[in-house]
Image 1 (cartoon, rainbow over the protein chains, first blue to last red):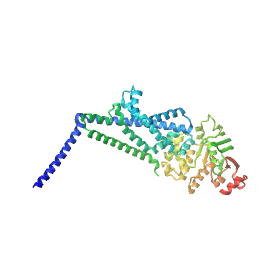
Image 2 (cartoon, one colour):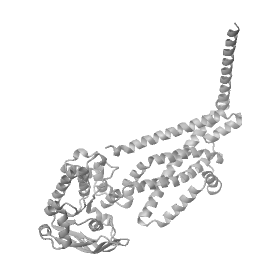
Image 3 (cartoon, rainbow over the protein chains, first blue to last red):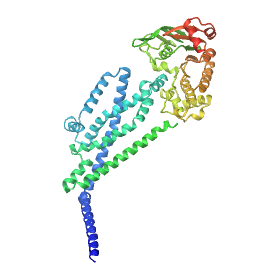
Image 4 (cartoon, each protein chain N blue to C red):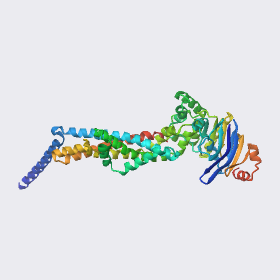
Length: 250
Length: 240
């Protein structure tokens, strides 16, 4: 008999224990997400993170292409000296300083007239990313066989037309995996935009934390959201690679 | 049609072309032969400024090709070029390879260019490859398409830079056949090649280049049967 009571006591305490776990789980979940509609912080955070990441990515690609093309044309023809010089300084400065500092300087000194911190974030991260993307694409351009350029030029296409229609598409295709890497890093890097008071995903966690004093829910949840976003981005790049590989099928 | 005056080209300290003078008339088929490193490819590439001459002049249809104010892109539209490595645009399918330049340069509408491309593809029996990509074709097919890609621009002269050197032996014939047809149509051609049979059959003049100079120039019969320069005699004894 004694043994039986022991056993039921054991099960009781286990169910009690799990009941407690469940209760505290629910409580944590409730005060992190449900109370006072706090999930709206997170939603707004996801939205801001995505806006900044996508805007900066597009800007980074644009800047990266322009800079890489100028640098390659300069190396080949010796023209565009001033532009090339400006871009050299740009790449050196941007790659040589932390992005958090760039953000603070951009917001408080350079773009002092722009109130919208999200916009400043897009511009700053875009400019920052452009420096890295330009080097990636430049490597891609150099890897395209010079015969492709010669063929284009021999048909009467200008240097610019040959670059735009023939070399650049092949260069970008070659460096898609590296570009994917860069944009994954960029997406996560946007988490420092909180320094400007923007309610991005990371800051949303901090704000809720300051109300609940519970680390577990806010941080684990935003970690999962970042992870999901990065997985989506990787998937997108895999699809792009497949699409671009169309011309490879032998 | 093409006149080369005092053409010199140096790469660093290396003198690749030394005072070349030559005149090519309309309809001629000039075949350039010689050992590797003799400057024959550089000579050809100077004609359309893929290599910039160090000094000298090149004239084409009354225009100085290497003149300071010459719009080289306009000159190149009338000088087709075929490369040893084919250099089809890897990111474009075959029909786009052919139509890209004429459409981009607004010489033809897309419809006209495609019609022309299809008729050229039909001529070489590859119309079923219009939507294929270069990576799906054999070397011989690629080179024949590279030739008609140049033809689609309606050039008045065609430059061939060792067009069969990168081909498997059994594919050389189909490319040479197309070049022969082109020659029979009256195209002016300058061909750098190691194909002596082709040189003998198609060439109106054969040039022998060595050490950056044209050592000998003669019609094929005389060139092969009665070579004068000892270097050429030596060369022919090795290749024939």
